[in-house]
Image (cartoon, rainbow over all chains, first blue to last red; front, side):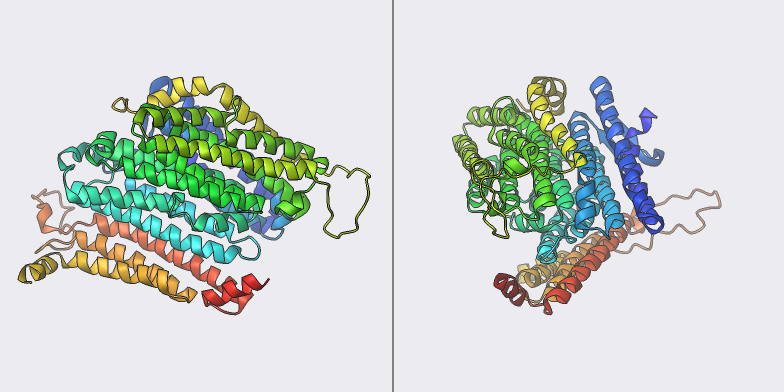
Length: 498
Length: 131
């Protein structure tokens, strides 16, 4: 059984997506348990896989028994073992938390929504597990298409925002495909390890350079790296809560993983950092991403949209950290994939709880909310502390690694950008907290009632319990950072990066 | 001038795909009508499909089917005699992807049209701003 984990990860959710859409015709109430079971299996096998990788080292799984480079192989090492575990756990928790919100926001579309949800997770897990460059493209499009369909189920502007996302997402995926085509022309192979073995004598070739740049730009479009971020805020803001809280934490992070995988396995760090000499400009772009994300977030008067701009800034953290080209920066980037997935999930679950109870998440709707939803607000405070980077929470540790990497590399602008963004996050979240905690609750209908305290109207338990688990996870991951770094991330980074 | 023509002619498949790709990109950026943008997107995808397919071609090669390959007489096969079928197989997948993307995009365009009664992006944005 444990031999088959890499296949189960992808195949169980894929098949259950079909079963869910069929079950939707019979009885809509069947869909949720099937989805939970499928993602439960995926989470179980990905955690089992991570434990196995920690014991035995990298695992190669040949799909259908065909040997690479002819067949498609799944490679799981410490890096993607960690990312697989994070993706599947986040997706599982969010599914449970989102049940009520899906039933409220999309009462007649629950069956297709669950099918798309599971399909999206299939794509994400596949992207992370696969060792084949073209297979990655196909899974990228599975993720993207199911994501478009889910986000477009939102209200008002959702369709237009999603269409813009679709244009940009297609351009990104096509660029990636084009880059893979160039690689195929020069190497004749699509298997990542095989390509890496053939490439070294060709490093001076213009085609390889072109392939790298084109793949990189494609992945950047997909992860919304500044200045290619324009599609992200609207698409994520207008989508249904359940879709945003799945897509916002995972898709950008998985794309960062793809970028790191390209650097580590396909092109090798030697090529990316030493031969190409583009690290400096990319880190400068990351600095711009962090500054712009922070400033644009300041201008927003809507909690969900503010969070989307924070994602843009966080993407800058990770891209910059990865391109610092030293061990501390790379550790910070990989650790931040884990932390940011959890932080963003926590923040977006708070938003979906608010949306469930209030029907709006503009700042004006949040006045005095702490008396109405004390537990949700407590979780928001933990998420905020983590995004700011206050010590016991996990956000502090990845930022610490990123900053020490920046100092080692002599990239002081990146360090300044990280500190600036932390400061802006303080302003952003304390503004929200001030509105929620200290301003009197105002009813939209305007009958100005006096001093009697607002009754508590907290979100249902199925939404609160996953939120608490994630909030506790933020602190636990922070406390166990040392173990994660020493036992997993240390082995994930090639020895050649010092 | 002569050299330039030589370069263009020698690698004409690349020039064609780049031209098509730029046409598609231009339509996606400049056009105001949503359906025109979607058509541009499809041209963009098709350009890459053509690029892949053209890389499989070889001068003087034939289709990659072995005649009498099943009778057990293993005769020598020269890879140079057959065009490379792998890019074609990959592009079957990419065509499916591009059809699916096109379908989703058109479905979104229909939803937008039903809501706003227009497909011109500036008019839709004006309507949204009025609300």
